[in-house]
Length: 309
Image (tube, rainbow, N blue to C red):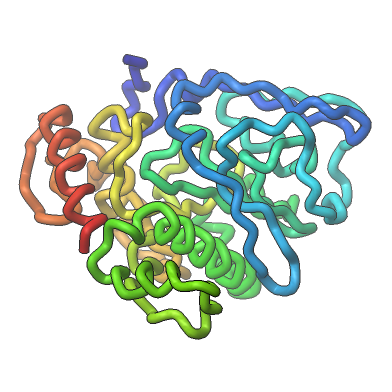
């Protein structure tokens, strides 16, 4: 198992920091390879298409890795190099997606526009874990607390994460709806011939409520990113206490809480010691102290119950 930095409020592992991403120019056809210890769990997703703001986008993960770049057609943000390969190392790894999203396959970059890029997290900490990457040069290297203090920018981000929340919720329904008691009537109706339209289906479970959206009080990567993540916290990449607590304590700041008050204690994660707190199950509240392996086993059990609701 990879070791993590000794910084008391640092959740990233050395393996995650050592990954590289290369931004290719538009004449190249091969997507960059990435060191990814959790690729196997990611590859279980399938390609979906949804209609968002009259733009059809290929979303989430493909069951196969495509070697052709994303076909989503958007203008690359002004001022960003696209004519030469650029390597982004360690904490700058997200820069490649911001600079040249069209270089990446659709199982990595799920949509992009002039202002935003959305990707599947390379090291997901839940069964569905997306990142929204703003492309504005004056914002991308700011701490999220500073960037999201701008009311106009915050509104843009809120609109964009609403789309991603809907995408993530649809993916949860696609994967787990067949297990959910709340979705049973909907699933049975979908078996009818001809299959009814979405408008005619029973509403079923509100999977949007199973999605968290927010930022870390101390981000592990240099480029501004917003997490869109399912609540289950079940992933092969969830490997230690600080990983878990970065999404299960106030170290994770919901997008709905912005802008933050100047005296908000979450501005001082080191003082608060969020990542070193006892491990509490997100569903039942059971305290596992520092026994991460026991928590992980418990989360797998809770996962089965959660799917069946």
